[in-house]
Length: 504
Image (cartoon, rainbow, N blue to C red):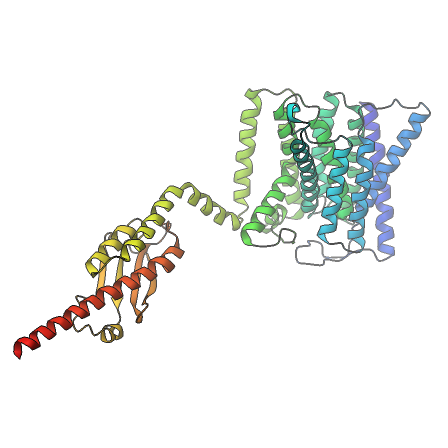
């Protein structure tokens, strides 16, 4: 254990020294970047090359390790995934560095993440997602490859998105590394534990200059590199877990904060119609700032959440249903109420959508009634029957209806004395607050013939599809009323003709 502690301290010291050198170099040569949009919190130009210090610390530490091992100064760590991770990790670092210095489109960064995921799969580092009995089939192989790549992409982008406050990404990932370190030691995977000790030390050394007020940022080079390393190390540990619960829950819970933020980002941008690759100020940390917290207070709260997730993961070291079922239940409840407290407007609409799904049977009943009414109206020849059909079909959604026929239509149709110019029914007493939905009624032969008003209680959900009301239902209602009134006009003409004949 002392070996890992020494490794952690030496890595932290090396990272701190490199971070200072890189920060001063960037300032001297004009590589500090000012805020380029309203989503950026910082106000002064700040270097975004902290990932360089973390990557160089990682390379120097393991170069020193291999040098010492060659001369027998340290024992070789078993079960190391270093070589599998380093080359694709370096690719992600370089792509992120280009983005920090020159700017790079999202598709290039995504392509690098996909290549990194494929590289891990090709070297045997993959998600345990296929049962061994079907593991040789092409479909199983393709599915496992896709899930492995997807996991790498998710973790890389989750770490990248949460890097929005001073010290947040580097600090939050330390708690995930603590979880991985504990599991790797318990499982006897000393090589993985050594990698984590170096990464954690590099993060700590970088945090000295990144904590609020930050004088250097992690940048995409750092967030992509750390995200990729974590995704690979989590897959490495998942392959060693004795049961499916640890395979699934430990990676998800250990990265609960960045994964939750990523899921929220994808869902809310989809619901609001914004680009999934865009940028905004709607992340969890932005919401905490909007609530009146300072940067440090917001970071402390998110650290506390990450630490709680780490403690929760320790419950799976020796899993039991008596432990993990209530633990996971409490975790899900906490995430739900925490997200709800943040006040995302998109999720109000999501809740409304979920309610409509739960009421789908009632929605279908209302829509079927409207469709049936539209069909029956095609065969109706008197206004009383029209009123009966409307009452039956609209009763589940509305309190009543009123149809007012236009004088101009009655004159054009030569209806001298219509049965009534207003057709109305009410089956619920009018509430104090009501919503009136009004639509013009048109007849193919005469154009606009009147207007229908539907009364709905405010605050009550409208179950029926408004498009059905506006299109097929409204069209057939206009045709039916036109036919009814034309029939009335014909009858009146015949009566006038009969009376005239009697006089003659």
